[in-house]
Length: 319
Image (cartoon, rainbow, N blue to C red; front, side, top):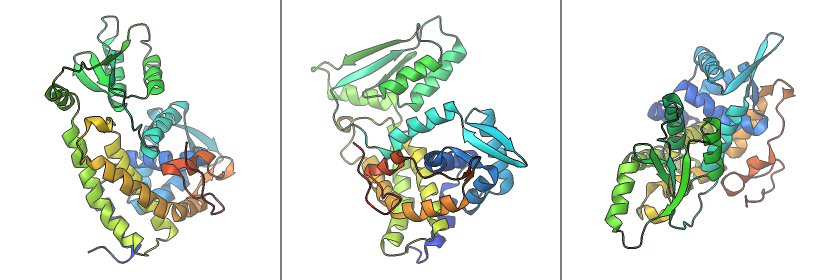
């Protein structure tokens, strides 16, 4: 039975998700702080993360590690430490935003993008780093040194190759499956190149955790601002965790009952339901190096097809 009080939902979600501290901080920055300039006082992050089950020590350790990994840069003003997204951190967030908040292209031209990274001139560490980045972008490994995707983000692909410093060694081609190739061969390629079973299991688990939350809140249990923020953050943390393992294959290549479709719809509906109280809590807690948090960037209101604007009016849907 769904809990009657919205704030009872949060510890149950945390127990089910068991989120890692560093990853949860990335979610806070990616979903919330980035929309308001990308900078936060460390004390603000500690207060925002507290209801999510993170103590001060866990937050400080995670922030320090994210700074070492190039996600964040530190700025000391008096006795206070502020952390803002770096250029690399912004790129990662922007790439994730496209995949998370906006629906994938609905049509596929039947062609594949093929990337060859097996050139002997590529240093092994650069090759491994590029392979990991391409997998993050949804590419599957067809063979050693050969990765494929039916409809990748071309700008992100070009940026990944450029950042790896291997633009002169990596070959990118477009290809299509011949009409006489058996459908079984395509299905076997999908199975071998991507772990779609794991992704489907992740979406099913997401639905199992958040459907009761939707049922409890949609029945009139409007959350208080802190609870709204906690639910929104955990929702996006869970969705991001499975979505970024999803290669986002075109509908033509997926089963008719692919659970990712229902998961995206649930995520969109629940996000819109808690968005206003979540923003109210965020703006009350977030302090930046420049002072109080600025208004959300206009692009924020295009998430999931259009949110409500700061005055309560319906924001236009994203094109």
